[in-house]
Image (cartoon, rainbow, N blue to C red; front, side):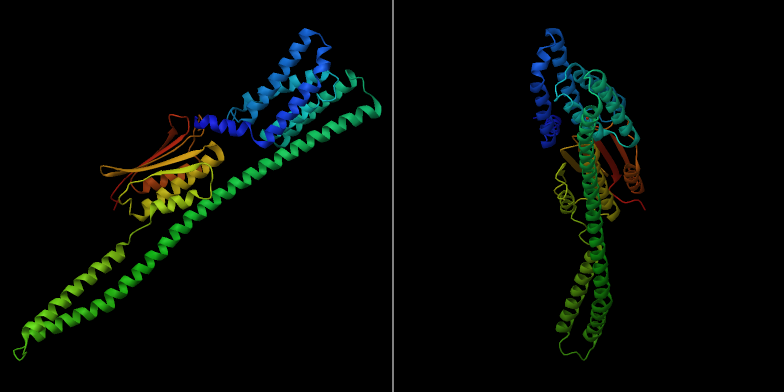
Length: 383
């Protein structure tokens, strides 16, 4: 199944939306008898309005209109007209449920003054229908209006709370990913410092002692009074080999094995269940330059959190290959990249890191419509 289709199904059949579909079905079934009394033509129009309302509700819930605010508002106007028209033409007590669904849909995408004005206008028209069409008055009018408004308010608050919880969870995942990357880099920095300290100790203490031993053995081997010059020469040769081996060990400690990039990236993806991180890294050694490794880690971290928060992706693929004198990093997700992709703070920070390495970063849409980040930089760090 196509990843985009799977994502759409996940959105449309979440528990909250299933409850909304049940509420819509109650209106459909509960208003059936009242619709039938209106004549076949009006009944058909009423059924069509119900279907249009459901289709619009599903389109808003699936987030297909993200990045198209005017299309979303136009659809909401159409849904509002359908809901109010059905309420005006049908005095069934279940049709105002559509206003609860409408308010929940509005609260999922709008906020602040715009949401308040929209809900107030919705209920002013509803109140006019109750008074003018349903012929309610006095206490009955206000009890009915306030009761339905309280249901709408509850739905709006519930939806806003759910949205805030999602935003906080996404922010927490992003912060956790950043902390994991920082911890990995700090741990490697501590190991680098410890290796450097030990290498200095070996060089200064053991190296100095072996050099002195070698010089003394050379002097002893040249002494004409030495009864066994061959044995003295053998000891000098052994001391020389040991000194050379010590220098190689010191150099290896200074160079260090570097960060295990695959392990660091796998740890980075663990706290984020979606998108799933898929790694395509070289079997051999990857970049050893500390700045290059940090740039890769930070780029994947930013792409992972952006895909989870904005792109609604299910999978993030990270490919790292060596092409001639360059490293190439390509990051693809299967979400939805915006049409007018802009270099925000995160992408600008990525680009600056790779430019400091003597490379470049490009951002665009891939074949499936998701975000693609491609970075190139030389294998040899610029002097």
